[in-house]
Amino acid sequence: MFDALRDWFLGLGAQYGVDPLVFGAIYVGAIPLFFLSLAWLGRNVRAKKSPVLPILAAGACFVSAYVYLILAGENVPAWVYGFVALLVAFGAWSTVRSIRKTIDEAKADAVG
Image 1: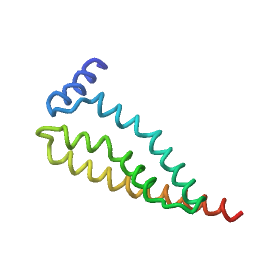
Image 2 (image 1 turned 90 degrees about the vertical axis):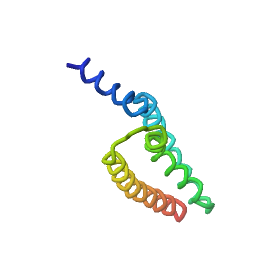
Image 3 (image 1 turned 180 degrees about the horizontal axis):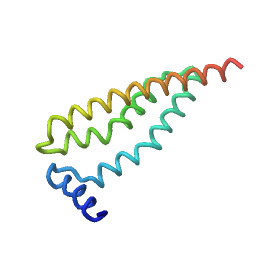
């Protein structure tokens, strides 16, 4: 059963021109970079520096695997693009919440 599932999953990559292992590596590899971006953001807010670069870095980390899917994918069904759009929208909302929390905590630490 596991072999059949693995073969199906890896077959999707061949069918659509996307290597599932590369997608997974980008996805998992971006997670620590995302959290480092949030730490960078907190440091910048406490130091009263611009938060723009850390916010852009966090956003880039979040969408990196999906950008790979969109750029490398061939004949990807339309529903996949819709699903990716929903994931990105939810992720953006979640990231904004994380950023606001990080900024609020950094401001509270700076005040006292």
